[in-house]
Length: 104
Image (cartoon, rainbow, N blue to C red; front, side, top):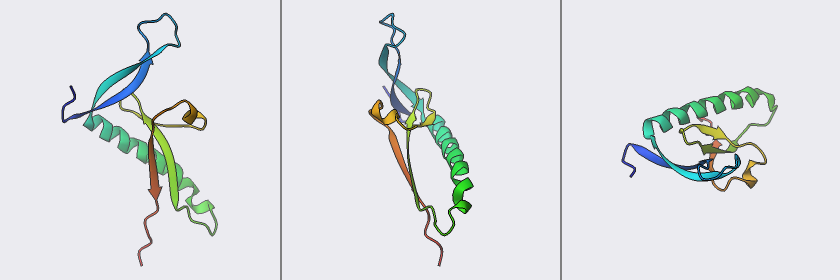
């Protein structure tokens, strides 16, 4: 059902079948690629702002690598996963950023 201009995201949402407010069900949503690209670029920009703050505070050390996990919500928004979430999340996107080698 997905075409070339979308990516299907599997997420959870409130269940329509149960009365419980905590019941969840799996949902598939086709998200336009341009929405995902825009949201991903914004997500990386915000992470860069966070990382840039600490670069001059490490003394003799250089931050070489950063790893973080994110999820993509049903609306195509990228969200950083906090500590303790990994226990309940079965799938996440893991990004590893490495510093570019210094130009010689």
